[in-house]
Length: 289
Ligand code: SF4
Ligand code: SF4
Image (tube, rainbow, N blue to C red; front, side):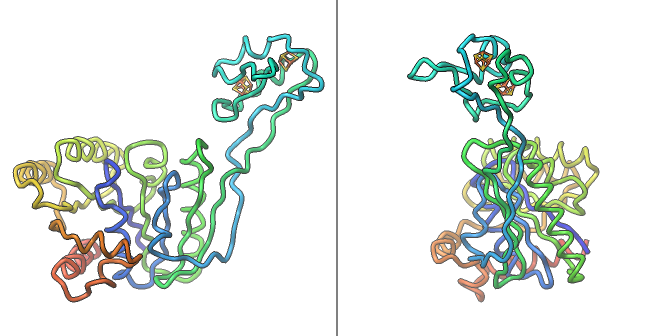
């Protein structure tokens, strides 16, 4: 079984369109949406949820206003500036700033603070027309996305092992944050989607540094290569210098957007057109390496 993670250095590079197209081609695969902060693969996959789980992302402090004397000790000692007076002049914890360190709970002279588990994040196992999809939904402003990515990947691997799948395809998050690190760790290959802009190239360079530190093979696709041929040349030179195989160059094609609007992959939308054929070629090069 081979696990392939699709990444881009920044959002909007076309990563999810590429992941969806590959889903149409890869046979006997399990899919995993690791972009848990802004999951969108489900918009195309139209999943039917079969299993649903809460994700415990840690604890947040809560002040019992019936007991609290507003002495201000917790506000003074919180290193994360998470405790403030509300409009009723009562101290309260902002759950989005609270890091769950539990210091305030220990120092409160009235025992007015307790730490409660935050179950505002969920993950799912769903059936789709392409196969099983493991995906998640984080609550607004929630943290610990890296831990959640690790959890959905663990489940995808368990399912893939159970059905003897040939591939796990991860749609990773943009950037190089902790959820990107959690998406890369232990994967067999990374497919990097690069848009030919200066910021796209710069972000791709940072991502390659990250992936190289894990010693994982990287392949690259240039998306919309024809929007800026000068920077496309720079991207190609960068890939050559860094010995990263360029497995495909996709032209700008409005049908990519149209297919998304129709909630289809490009392969489903225009199976006979050149852009779809290019995806078959990309997939062949990845699996042959
Ligand atoms: S330390 Fe305890 S009593 Fe004092 S303000 Fe904080 S919660 Fe209230
Ligand atoms: S648990 Fe830590 S971060 Fe949260 S309010 Fe208390 S002291 Fe601040």
